[in-house]
Every structure is written in C-alpha cells, then in structure tokens.
Length: 375
Image 1 (cartoon, rainbow, N blue to C red):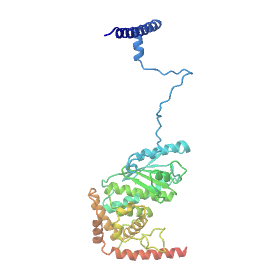
Image 2: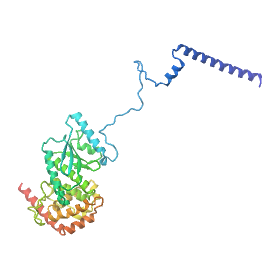
Image 3: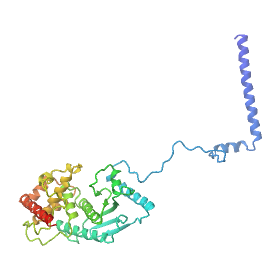
Image 4: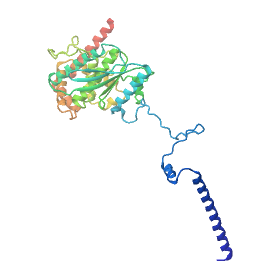
C-alpha cells in the first residue's frame, strides 16, 4: 500500500472517530440533564404512547373512518329466506317509533293450533284481532275436516309472526319500500310469507284488505308446517279461497250436484265480465304450470287457481278429492307430490269435474252479469 493510500484511510478513520465522540457526548449530556434513570427511560419506552391533547396540537383522524351500520339497509344475501328478516323488520319499526312516536309492540294471538305474534302499529281497529282469530278458527276447522282429525288430536302448532306495514312510500317502514329495496317492483303484491323465518309481511291498504291478506299468508304457513312443499297450484288455490271466503264451510252438504244459485262458491269480484275466459286456464294447464308461477306474468295463474278452487271447494266431491290429496301428503311430508298424482286423485274422486266446472263457471258469469245490471 502506498503512502498516499495510507494517508487517505487514516483521514477517514479519524473523521469517523470524531463523529462518534460527538454523538456520545450529546447522549451523555441528554441523560445527565434528564431526571429519569436508564431503567425509567426503558419503562417509559415500553409503555403505550398517549396522544398529545394540548390545545395547540391536532390529533390526526384515521384515514379509514368506521361507518355505523345502517340497520335500514338490507343485506345482499338471500334475504327473503333468511332469519335476518325479523331483525330487519324490527329495526325499521324501532326507527319508526323514534321518528313518528308510534307505540311499537307485539300482541299474541293463540288458538288450539296456532301461535301468532302481531305488531299493532299499522292498524287501530280494535276488532281486527278478533276478526282474524275468528277467520283462522274457521280455517283450522276446515283443515281438521280435510285431515279427518279432531281438535283433541296432536298436530304441529303453526307459529307465525305477522308484520303489518303501511302502503306509503314516504314512510320509512312502508311495504312498498320494503319490496323495492329487495328489487321487487310489483305493486300487485300485498303480502309475503317467508317460511325460513316463520314471518309474514303484509301491506295495509284497508282493514278488510289487511285481514284477507293475513288469512292468505297464514294459509301458506299452515301448508308449510303440515305438508312441507305443496304444488303451487294447490298452495295458492287454497290461500285464494280462504282469502275471499268467510264462514264458507258447510259439513252438511247433502249432494254433489252443482247448484249455481245456492253454491257458496263465487268468482272474484275483479273478473272481467266482458271477456271472462281470457285469463282462465284449463285444469291440467294450471296443474303443470309450477315454473310459471315464479314469473311476473302470472295473473292468469292466480285468477285460474282462485276460480278452480272456488268450484272444487264448493262441491262435496271436490272437497273429498282434496281431502284425500292432503291426507296423503300430511303423513308423508318429505315426499314430493307430483302433478300427475294430483290429477289422478281428482279424476278418481270426481270423474266429471271438468264438465261440472264448465257448467258452474257459465252459471256464475250469468249470475254476476245479472247482479251488475241490477246495480
């Protein structure tokens, strides 16, 4: 190594030593001027750092803010079959109680076969629960007849929570907003039954409409508990029948003859008398239309189901056929009831049902036209 290189290395070492000495002196001076011992310094370092809250200091907010969960916002999962329905509805009712100050509570309604919980925020009619109880007693009496059981027989108890919501888009807990927030844009819907939650949500437009819809949704709950999954035609047909009929059951039917003047069955009031056959489907088309019920264009299905069950349940042979079908499903709820089995059971119990239906329907149209002319 040359003398020149040795000189450069020596200068670099001396410079580094000088910086080290200076830093050491600064450290000694700091420690000597601080009253804390080395041990205390270590403990202070290990302790959690406390924010400086002096007035001339500003605490920085975190970059990511924690946003409170809006309970009114629906989840994106399969909400209609989830138990979150109950939490959602309850949250909205609580929200309404804070904003509009209504009394939010639930009142029980129990019978021999059912246990209901009703919210009382959407209706004020004192006779509503009494009317609903009376209608449901009629329903369960009819089911007892169909299943050939007595009130003493042990049957599953139907438990259902009914939520009545006003039909007011400006209301934070309205039925229409409930549907729209789920992407359902169908103003004709008046109620939903959610079997996974044992919950029925009902639109309130009037006391009579709410009562009829409550009965309709209760039928779905009964069918779900008693029979599992029924063909949609039967499920909706029975619900439509009881929705539009009260005190219709007569165990003393003396014959199967269809008498249009004395039959307790009736057509829907909204039927178009100028073209009554336009929306009417024949029985087997209706029976094999399971998939079509899930489309938005299902008006003819509901109409036809309602009309066919008005006819079948107004005739003794129709009652007998449905009783056989429901009894077989009641004792084997896990077995799928096919459309072919339903058709065969009806044909065996009531061979001339199609012929009698055509006669009955024509007579009903004549009666309704006469009634409209008189009014």
